[in-house]
Amino acid sequence: MFSPDDTIVAIATPPGRGGIGVVRVSGPGAGAIAEALTGRRGFEPRHATLATVTDSRHEAIDRAIVTLFPAPHSYTGEDVVEVSAHGSPIVLEAIVAAAQSAGARLANPGEFTLRAYLHGRVDLVQAEAVAELVDAVTPLQARLAFDQLEGTLTSRLERMDQTLLDLIARLEASLDFPDEGYHFITPAETAAALEAILASLGGLLRDAARGRMIREGLTVAILGRPNVGKSSLFNSLVGAARAIVTDVPGTTRDLVSERVDLEGVPVTLVDTAGLRDAAENAIEAEGVARARKARDVADAVIVVLDRSQPLTRDDRAILDETIARRRVVVANKSDLPEVWSAPEQDAHEVSAATGAGIAGLRGAIVRAAGGDILRDRAPIANLRHAALLEDARAAVSRARASAAASIPEEFVLADLHEARGYFDEISGARPRDEVLTAIFDRFCIGK
Image 1 (tube, rainbow, N blue to C red):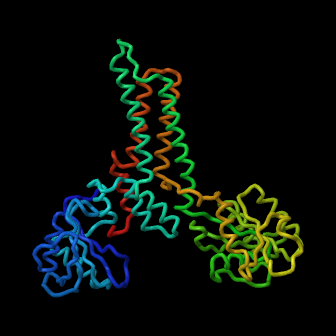
Image 2 (image 1 turned 180 degrees about the horizontal axis):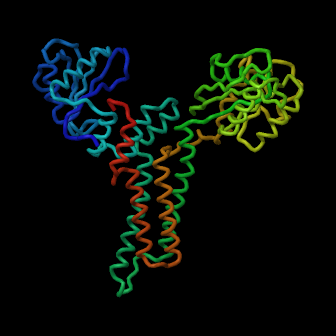
Image 3 (image 1 turned 45 degrees about the vertical axis):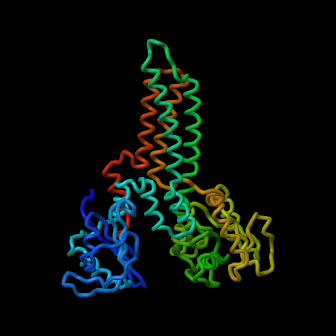
């Protein structure tokens, strides 16, 4: 694990050129390092001060804004100094080197947030949310991470934990007076309280799948026979000419994929070779085989039909093969005279050539893949949290069964203490070093 006792420094802004770059220093020596960098004596807390930053030879590096955040009212809970300089990588690296010469150590990935956690500024759920907010690539991912940072999951766990603590106290009080026959809670009352907790845990775990969809994204394969406009539709959804489009059947031979934002959900679209039984050569046959593999592993499929041509045997075979899958049927080429109508196949009418109907199709794809995930905010999206909540639910379920069967309090208590332990692992109240290392190693340097 990292040492929390020394002073660390890192660039806190992304690599590359920019108008402003920030160097962050945290630790007991942060104030002294700021004085060494600027030659000034003392900084007013939370007051931006214009100063000349110099290196160890007292040669000027840049004119910068220096701000001191004294402990405990800072991001890390320690003394923190932030130096806002011009965003040249050379300038920022020189400031970091000067801070190191003054006694700071280069920070490890996630070390600033780790210190915030160790000093009680955030719990472990919120610390993980910091990394997820930094990594967010869609507005929905950012909103989900910010909810966690605001303590949405933590507050729900605290309510359940408080109920468990109350039950434990009453059950243990009953154990303290066995001969007197005092019972501070009946088995039926215990079972009813635990049933309510199980319902809450079940709701959290049902939402976890929705949250993971937002966090991790979906894979959607575009299927159809040759020349129905799959690649044109792919390019239209992507917003760029990524796939080759020609009038020659079988142009697409390999899988072409692109990550896009659909309704706030990151979706990997996969354009596939045209599906037909009579492949003309070995290369097309391999493309068809890969298309079928993509169909089998995708979270959902888009079946593209040509509305301007009669449905073929290959069209109907693809519809039959995907009937049990999460899918969206698309009636493409709505800009041409229709041979059959979209309602006949419960299809979304679009024109990949003109863009008509594409906006509505985006939402339909997301709904087909996982339901209306935009209806509510999913409280959890983290696999570690979901796994621990499953363990907690199993422990509470055993306790409820024991209480319902009037099994002695000792057995109920053992399971309730176990469930609280899982809650503590989620929040970080009882952390394991290997868990902390795995979490904070994924952070970027400077955060």
